[in-house]
Image (cartoon, rainbow, N blue to C red; front, side):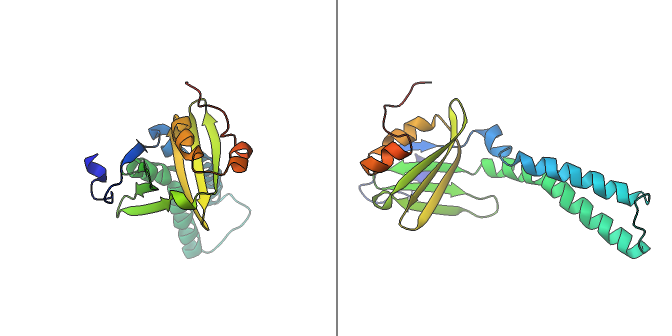
Length: 177
């Protein structure tokens, strides 16, 4: 609760708070790592000088260095950055709004007023794991890799129009997993 003390307005109460699942959040962009591994293989192949294109020594050194930096960032760096960022990602729903706080170097606060809520989407990542996207008023908020997302979806369903609830699967009661 202390984490949110400066975020709450007068007469506002917290109804839900959560964080992303650590491994799911860290590895949510795993496809980048596979593409980077393929790119690194190509860079190292041409670095050996056995590739079909022979270039000037200075260009060869620049190409290799740029390829290695991009390849290591896309392959490993973004995973390490996501792990560091995970420690600073928090989500909160009050009776008036949805708040997301994130950022490694600086704090980013994203606020979504529940009165503007028009649509909620869920992307299932596992049995009790999903990414929830909230839309409304021309804005969008994504809550990545939530464990037990049905708890949040059940609370959000009271703020969504009945016809939209059926379209995104918010009709039935929440399941216990």
